[in-house]
Length: 361
Ligand SMILES: *Cc1c(COP(=O)(O)O)cnc(C)c1O
Image (cartoon, rainbow, N blue to C red; front, side):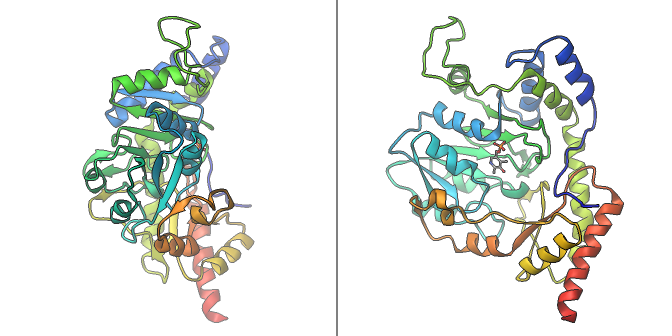
């Protein structure tokens, strides 16, 4: 049987709460579970405000709209990440500017950010790539507003502080493959009451909170459904459990692969990482993946560098050779809380065989 890259792990009241939402007919974007879910996530990150939205990409777009980012503005983004940050900047008519990642931890390199700052720079989207927090003290020095994309990093910490708590605003994704999930879902976190109120309006048709059908902004509908938030509430009640389960899987992998010819993902000393997808890298990546896929293991290559993609070919970029190097060598192994010991051993054996196989030939 095929071992998937990712799979949802249920840990608590998912079924109970969803059935409750169905029975009480509270399915739309207003309801008790929305409020409960928002409060729980805010508490987990120490933030004042949490706004639950339909997905992580819309969370990013909502932050950009809340900050008033518009055509002519530039937003600095790492050259290697899932594409949402770049696409959401373009969705508000602004321009992404791609900069390289650091070889020390694969997050956006503050030295490269500095080179890319122009009079039009309005924000930096700092992505906590693959569960590794960005160097926020360094990024803060430029005095440019930071948007933290913590979609892949639930549970990680920077100098003792949890991800989701950095920058003017932060976002999480709760997509099916993320560590805490609602299938599709996302949220925005901030401590700024003015920006929270503005975003609350924008995501709700631009409507005034006090005066129904009075539209302050040409708004959007970015709301999460109460049914989705019911699942989110159950998952968030077990936030730490879900994070620990994945980190446990990563520890098992680490123990074996530390002794192999493969390289582990680099980690900075100030970071407490949290594993999203377990990542290795090797010059032999494509050959290893071929073998693993033949063995029924859904291991996958990391993203392409975004500046190389068709969608972003006309966007501004600075040198991104670290991103290109990582994109050519890195790959993911199946990682999810409910991965059985047996299946994980199958993955490990397949990887080790692929290396041996390579030597024999
Ligand atoms: C998953 C992800 C998102 C948001 O994804 P959605 O599928 O829209 O929830 C945003 N940024 C990063 C870095 C991601 O990995």
